[in-house]
Length: 205
Ligand SMILES: C[S@@+](CC[C@H](N)C(=O)[O-])C[C@H]1O[C@@H](n2cnc3c(N)ncnc32)[C@H](O)[C@@H]1O
Image 1 (cartoon, rainbow, N blue to C red):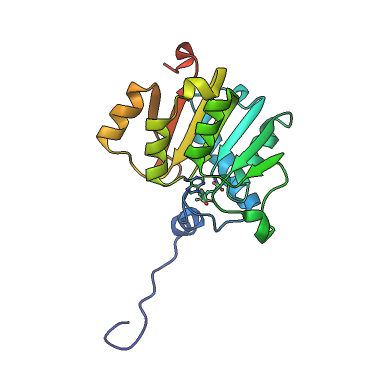
Image 2: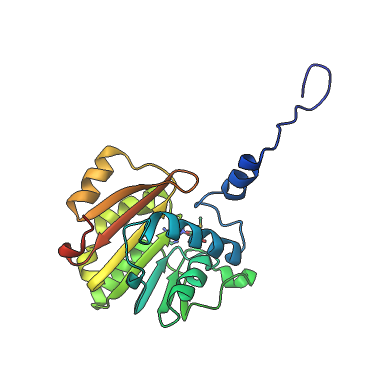
């Protein structure tokens, strides 16, 4: 409220509208799944997939696991890239009760991400692609520290995590020592891309 009793209005510029569309960020689950899928298309085309990015679209193949799948927007996008994939998700929240989960997933588990991967590790099951978007910092750190991704990824598999916060130097050092590489995306808020490849020679230059 201003001194004269009026409410201060922030001018809305085209940039502001554009930014606001994403201001919920990667850590939001407020958008509907189709909106999220559209956002992922833009992020992947600008920051992740070649030619602008660093990964071939062919990483989207076979068995895919989405950690913190939420309402399933990432599954919608990944199925568009390759309809042949079999994608499962896991999330601590049961979104199906809210009728909001996308139908692209063959199964959604209600389990914590690290606990889920520890079970996968014990079972000897492997995925071709493990993705996540918007997991909390604490979960990302535990994933990096506790999970041996060489054991849960198929030989040519990829793990790809997107977050919209910075990792501290110590975490980056731990992540890199375990074969992860950290990239800064530029879409349109600070985007951090954390990747890991099951086979060391698949690491991008
Ligand atoms: C910001 S939402 C993103 C959802 C979806 N990945 C997307 O991008 O549309 C983060 C999701 O991660 C889930 N989540 C948070 N911590 C988790 C954990 N430790 N294990 C599994 N899911 C978790 C939340 O319940 C929420 O659905």
